[in-house]
Image (cartoon, rainbow, N blue to C red):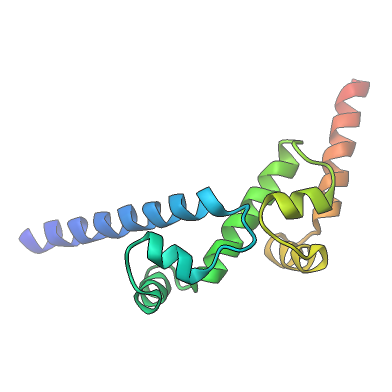
Length: 130
């Protein structure tokens, strides 16, 4: 019984730490100059410790995790119709290179950001016609 309680406590600590990491990243996701070293510093740990802990808890490097969060934000911006320009979305979520952004967006979601924008525009037009 005590071991189960310790496992839950450890799991909760990991989840709280990941939530803190997510908060720190989301505050700076728009900044294309954010670095793993900077994130580690904000989390009050060495870069190497941060990299190891992230890899152990998420299976991803901090950079992969950062990019994944940025892509999720970009997807949300498009779906919520806050931006209908790939370049603007790209910069809003912290990517400098539109081609790189489009390539990894497509790899993540299976379609390009432009395809999603067009789909959302078509749905909006369809709703207006009803």
